Length: 273
Image (cartoon, rainbow, N blue to C red):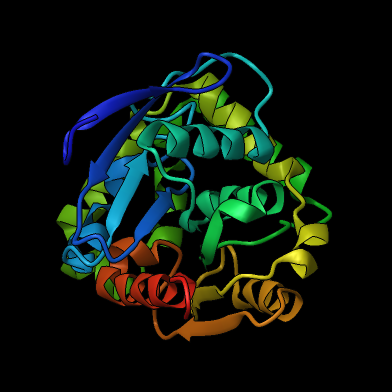
């Protein structure tokens, strides 16, 4: 296991997970789970903004990036098992666990199934449930990709990801995200869409007894503020932050602010805090 370079961990079912461990000053540990169709580089601006405050473990979820893409039924619980196995590989008993969008669903599943390993929970641009129509809506998105390719979704995605002003001012960030998106393999993308359509973590929320921050942009229409408010209302003691003028990819649009929330979670989750 080497710092700041990509390495491989093997999950309990033999799936190879590509990860990167970025060492900090030892004040804490954070595991960061990326959004659908992104990869570990999604978190790099936020990790840089942490400026060594904590050790950070970033990785490519199965079906994404340089990790294996087994042909199987995906679930957020399966992805959560991968997080547990990756933490075992790194020698981490517990950590702050945070995720964005799809990664937030995985973080919720991890918190539900491995609560003793969660020091604090960060939920960014995400939801516990996409709604009654979710299976159909996600299936339609997967079918469009399978029929027309990932490029057919780019226009739809990039306006959801970033605010208009950010897209205009930061074309390099937008193009990098599009590049990662286009590299996705269609069967794995479709399987992950189905996973999100089926995800429902609502029942677990009242059981959480660790510090939690929920944050969402005012312009996020992928997982709008009412979804964030539902989670914050149902997780005991959770704090809700509505972030003005940003959309769905806050770790890329406002990485310093997201890093600030992670720092607060590290402090809140520390023993004796």
